[in-house]
Image (tube, rainbow, N blue to C red; front, side, top):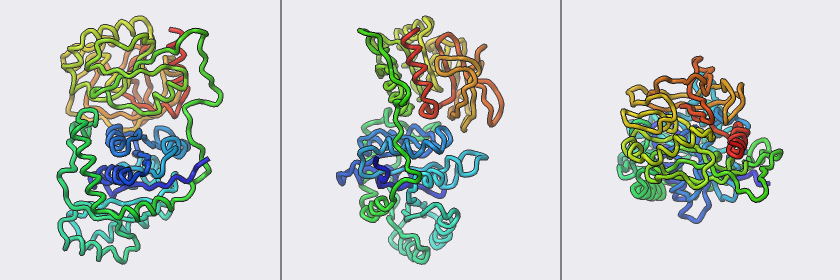
Length: 458
């Protein structure tokens, strides 16, 4: 059992310092050297892993100590890094910023400690010189269990500016492993919920990732960074890789019958999903087939269940509405009692309308864009039985949207939210479970098994 994957964590003092550029560039630069690179992202973000996948040719995976629990961080890391030469983990927010009111939980520092990984601190040096030493010293000394293995100076203005920064850092004991100049060509466009996903700008995203790789290869000491990663040693606690197949569960299939087909929405409008979800569905005995609601006018042949995850249906409301044949087929599937799991974007798609445009009409609710951002982790419990879980099942989730669904809950809500404020949310009707809440099924693998079993019997 391999538990000593070379690894490093890319962190920063705050958001906007350049973590995504540096982490993605490092992944691509190491991959260009012929290394098999495993890409990871701290937190619930769905978008950055898409850029990581472009950089490495491997699935980008999330490590979230809040959604999945600290005990699953190392096993999920090892699962994703299986067969790789080196792993790069991109942090979230500032190094020590975690779940609100929960101390270090789910922070980059917390994940780095759970992985026993050295941290490379990316510092936006655009408006400082000697002060950089005080900043780096503070971050390096705040928590003695977090090892800052080096610093990469970003947005450096000139050779003179670089010299001043290096001179200031000489006495800090933290080596400078890279210096990056300002480079607009590596910027990626943003929208109301962050970066524009790869699925919406693939050719431009490929060019951006290539530019990131070139910038990092020019400005960073790749040999020193690789040596830092290789010095990480074994993971703490002797963790084993996570597996989507439960040792106590063996999918059963009736003789002569094919596996139930679970259709999973994809494409530009529904690009948010965790890789482990489809792995869990397949391990539970489903045949997972992806389709694109923007273009496919029919569900995959034999569809017995439907999963519609997150994304940006508000951006594509016109196209989704225009695909009337698919909308009608989804409504018929749901009306027939088939299992349907919808999160956030999926919830909007199942509503009667979105911003005045007809959607699937499965739920007697309307959705619209607003100026208000709803963002944060949630503690939740299932209010009643559904295709995903029995009543009383506790899970943790994440909300991230600028839309409003009215009403916010059906006669049978999907979740009772326990924190930060008590309320009910979402819809359960027949085989439908629809909610704003993004969850990570690895934390409760019975969700996928229950869903597939309902697909067999509905």
